[in-house]
Amino acid sequence: MTAEQLVLVGGLWTDAPVWSEVVAGLAERGRQAVPVTLPVGAGATLSDQVDAVLAAVDAAPGRSVVVGHSAACTLAWLAADARPDRVATVVLIGGFPQADGAAYAEFFAIEDGFMPFPGWAPFDGPDAADLDEPARRAFEAAAVPVPEGVARGVVRLTDERRYGVPVVLICPEFTPAQAREWLDAGELPELARAEHLDLVDIDSGHWPMLTRPAELAGLLAATGR
Figure 1: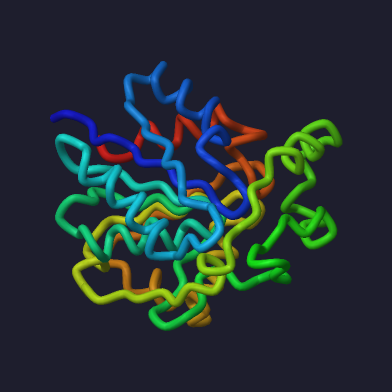
Figure 2: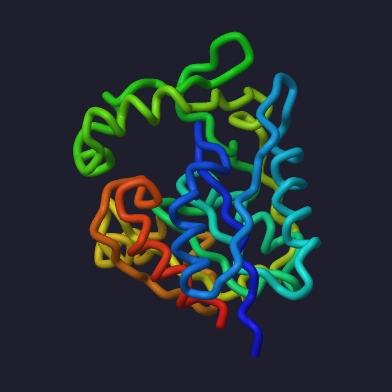
């Protein structure tokens, strides 16, 4: 059976190049990966970003594994909701899908129509512990402000067939045991209804595509075969 294409969707403030080393690692393992360039210009909306992910899914010759990082876990889940027959697996890295009716990612201050990278203080601790100073400076230099229409966009989920799409949750700055506790406590309602959910550990901070790209590529290469 031919392995599915991987569609890679970066989280807040990142763009397609954040996946460069992961894409190379996947290619070495015989897997094709397409990093999505999300619309981030003034006036871009959450719907625009969902459409960009769906365009990559629709362009694949077969089904796709859709990988979302951090806030973009919701984008990956929205793709499964919109294309449950074309999304073979959803992989979530360091994040969880928002529920229907929630704001996509209204986490930090909006300035002049955008949510800029807020600096490292909010990520002090396990999130950024494995990013050294050069890596942090490089991240800041490449950080793409998030349009207000994306950050404050309202999540709309309409097709319960999404719960039948297998989900892999890769746990970087938290452990699978912690994720299981959150599930049991009812804090992750969308994942709690997933019919097939695997929890996978990776020893990294919040951005394993930057700090553990080879290991992350190995985990992703094992999905959708």
